[in-house]
Image (cartoon, rainbow, N blue to C red; front, top):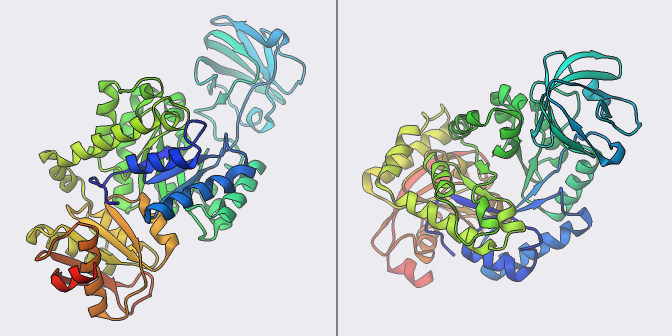
Length: 478
């Protein structure tokens, strides 16, 4: 099933979409990657969800990627007398280690690592930023704050700390168990929440050991401060705009989104834009004009994928939301300005053989108006590097690895196909043309660019580019 767009779509599964029939409908509507949110999915049901997706994959004979999104630490205040309290502007309010029920003057903060890290002047946000406190003083086991934005505070509301780097790992005990369950179930990507430092990502990659690739969710100001280091070690990144918009001024988020997308494109690593993209479609069959523009902006910037959360997990119109997002991406990619923007934002090739070959294939495709680049790849790296160039051509990724084919379903412009490895150069060219014809990306008489590494089956050895012609013999075997 070929897509009429290069930008990929992630959809979150949930109560509105967690059965095989709906998963199939979502895939037909345009989903390339399914997200399993471990904040709401018990690990005991994880394997069942993966098997549902794999059954749809077998039915449509197309690789589908699965992303397991780890919950990460949940920082919350304790409970209150009467379940809540009303805070007044300018009053003092204390966060402490006392487990007694909270009052209008204090509450238990069951996170000693926060109390030991807060400093005077730091901001503390409660309940997704609805309340804002400013730390005035700290001592052993407590922090006294001044209420800047007042309101009602109630039991176990979330705490955000935009100014504070907390000495806590991105993975909790729950996340470690969920990670092992996800790897055992055979997911393709792991999304890591609460990333503050590159060491957080390294911990997950050490456990994964290549069984799945790791996507860093960029949702904290501390991660933006160390963006280059985090992106270098990550396999992909997600612009998690919801939490970013809580911990940073909202007006800064669009600029940060563009900065992350450009950095990811420069490195040739997939980047996903997420949160509230078609939020109104949770309850409405049509989006707002602003939401359409928001999705279009991410596509114009060259994001690899755009993501649906509650729209597909619990919304009333999950299939409509996917179809709408797909139509927006298709329309943007047909706009005459789209490709000029792609060329303007392209990064210079790195000084490697793989990048030189990827850049050459892009130039050849542009010069000869060739619409298909067939990349023979074992690890997926060849397809990643070609996609980095954002060619005005479909990238057919031909790989003997099912895992690689699934992972590449996330990558911009890549149409992955699992097939046996090529036996020689002629076989490589012949089957590239055959698949290009069969998948309807090329017609008889068209040319196909073939990219590969010699010797065959050697990861990271991309060193050859060839032009092949599609003919009747290919049609006979397609």
